[in-house]
Image (cartoon, rainbow, N blue to C red; front, side, top):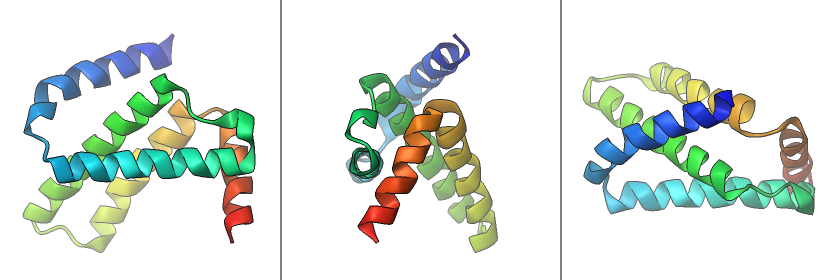
Length: 113
């Protein structure tokens, strides 16, 4: 239930502000979502992302890129960018993905190497 509420809030918030996003940024986010999905499927074919998860991850990545863009405008260094990235990736791996999906991603990454 908590995930559904968070996803709804994210979706509504980003829908309102999402009109200002560039096509390049949206394309980059789509690539990130598909990359994550392919890593999951490489580890375990049954652990692919659901449509709801794809939407949640898409919105989180859009937020992340917006925050990185704002930080860059304000002269943030690489360490500040790492903190921003860590915050959003933790959100994805702890709140959106299941434990089985995280495990499948690890296996998929090992197979790719």
